[in-house]
Length: 258
Ligand code: HEC
Ligand code: HEC
Image 1 (tube, helix red, strand yellow):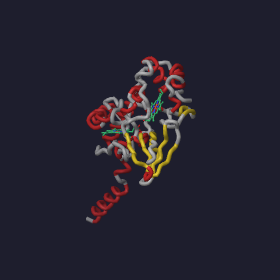
Image 2 (cartoon, protein in one colour; image 1 turned 135 degrees about the horizontal axis):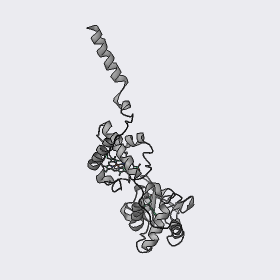
Image 3 (cartoon, protein in one colour; image 1 turned 180 degrees about the vertical axis):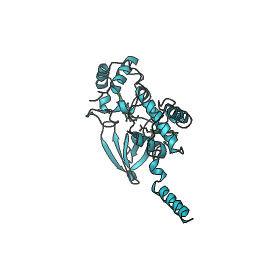
């Protein structure tokens, strides 16, 4: 009787010492069946945001060799389990072994060979510097303006299709950290730029010529925010299709800004 009780106590203790949290973090070796099951789960729970092939949509592109939030499989597991706070990426209720199956499938997506780019990166580099005027707003390899995001590593963050969307239709997906604001001061001057900072009493913006402005809200008669408007012009009518291909090949090339 006592030995059975002791055994039970020992069992309970062992369960306490090996909490599920820890053991689930040991990655099982994925079989082809696991990847197939991962694909099935992905199709029902992830693809409506990330696209069936991880090509992106409301959610980030996953068909990339490197994911910024998930450089290794364990961090990928955690991103899927916990979601990304402050974004639309939700936590998931999947069991740990199912999450590992999804991890295995997401890594397959990342291996998908980048679509063959037809443009010429050397010509694209020229267009970037001249006709495109991109350096006015973007930094590349440490050179250029500062109002837009640094494009040195754009090839690892966006695939060719997304870069094309950014160029043709910049308003389609404006990241929140590039919120465009327009303010009007009491003496009638108006300023448009990207919001750098804001609190209850003041707001700071950076305008197109990269000038920094700070205002007390009490000095302003208007603050309008345009979350879906980009400061970046569309290049739909200013660049030819061939020039766009060259530019995209340049931005996607590994030696991009280097
Ligand atoms: C409601 C939409 C939505 C659903 C459903 C969703 N995601 Fe996401 N996911 C997002 C968004 C949005 C982001 C980008 C978050 C950010 O701004 O960093 C993201 C980011 C990620 C990232 C990080 C990408 C990177 O570049 O580091 C991974 C990995 C990911 N999701 C995997 C999944 C998987 C796997 C599923 C299904 C289990 C899933 N997501 C379901 C919207 C979603
Ligand atoms: C007048 C300033 C301006 C010019 C000129 C401009 N951009 Fe932008 N660009 C921005 C801003 C601001 C963003 C930030 C997101 C948004 O508002 O769409 C951006 C976003 C982008 C993005 C998405 C980057 C990301 O991390 O999401 C790409 C790619 C891009 N620009 C490429 C270019 C290229 C290539 C050119 C030249 C052909 C160019 N831009 C010209 C201001 C500009």
